[in-house]
Picture 1 (cartoon, helix red, strand yellow):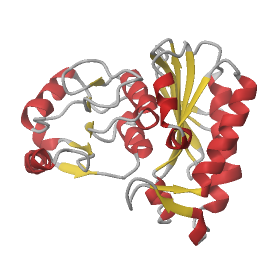
Picture 2 (cartoon, one colour):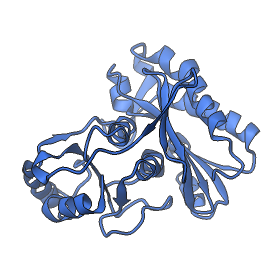
Picture 3 (cartoon, helix red, strand yellow):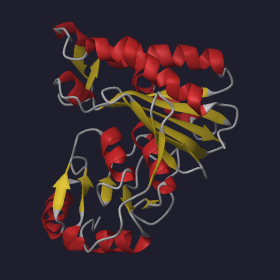
Length: 274
């Protein structure tokens, strides 16, 4: 389902970029290697920039017909994001997801990529440089934990539980302020709320069956396309707040993911009243 892009080759490229450009800089960043973008907690590091440059250059050589959409490329040229909707084939990359954690020396960051074919996400990869493994999959083929030695384990979401027993992740920082207070109050109805400040690891936790919900309000393709596809392949119900499918060109409308439609409905009605 991934058109002309070999997903295993792309996964290996993410790993090589992490080993060459990201891991050598972890907990070794100098003062000139980190800068803020839109706000003090929105950071870019030399690892982000150099890893994306490596991935972009090798992807262009391997798949010259694919449009490359990288987080840092779009930061430099915002008009690039508009090319995603009309692209026959695209690769979307987040070179370091969880940059705030990375820059803080917290080992919770990842490298993510998705493959888009004719407006549809057809493959997703989340690589964990610290654990040296991938959660990855193609549309219709399931979600898998894969290791460099070839070992593979098929993943599935957690079994549904009652609302008061749900454990999950919600990113509330981008909600409008009046709604943020309401949602945070509603979250007292669930068992546990967390936020890793790293969508890569939040999606990995969900797809691995460890948590029962994910909620995001701000949607950028490099943050959510891979994880949403993998969640669906692992058995989840994943849509925007209005129940419509989340598509590669969407940057708003929110995203709620749960083990099944009934859990989604309960969370939407009782907690995420947006």
